[in-house]
Image (cartoon, rainbow, N blue to C red):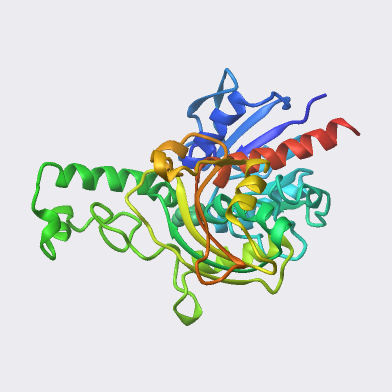
Length: 351
Ligand code: 2RA
């Protein structure tokens, strides 16, 4: 029989994309059970052509579940992930709760699919959306040239902060629409937008905000440290040097990263393009003369990481600079989770 799947957090921004993906991808699942908080229980959601009623998240709801995907905040995963494992499910978790746990593999199917079987806690973690967009493009270059260091600047979409982030940006854009002087005087945008900043520390409309996540030691944001720690773990490079600056931009969906990557060997831009052309999960869009760049407005709603602007550093023959954009709700979240879960489904059916 085909395995039973539970989707926890089925009504959130990522859960909604997950239902779209389950409707479009190969049908490897038997029953699909949608779970959410009591507030959303009872809602009807279309998934894989069926109208499913969202059930409340309880321990019993995992009875008979083979694979449980979690798209919920860290504290909800921390509580309910182990509860699902105790009822016999393998958990694929998209929160930050378990990513750096030694006994939890951090899997990107294009890079380290074999790690799926190495799961002593019964939990497999999905990486942060910013890491995922970038790492799919960095890994093939690492295989070619041997990565030593990453210097990163992110341009993160508001949907990374959930549906509330999206609603906040659209509300702010409608408040400022039509005014052609707002952006040229200090304080004016703040005034027009008002006090409701949603999940952000400053207005998003007509602005960029160099902040995502929460404050960690040394002035780093948690999001910046995730890029460092998760890249090291996924690539199996515990000493990789990573410096990141994470920035929120007024884009609805698709996170972008400007990457400066230093390698052990000399690089050349055409060799890098060739490696990326053949890499799974990557699309090369690199023709500036024709106005072709990787951009959120094109990458949104698509599966791969879009890569372009590939240049060899002028001052370091071992360094490449490039730009990468990926849909933070798809590869950055729901898609990578679905790909991991499909590896498990294949494992269960071959038993
Ligand atoms: C963000 N990466 O974009 C975070 C959330 N998953 O805010």
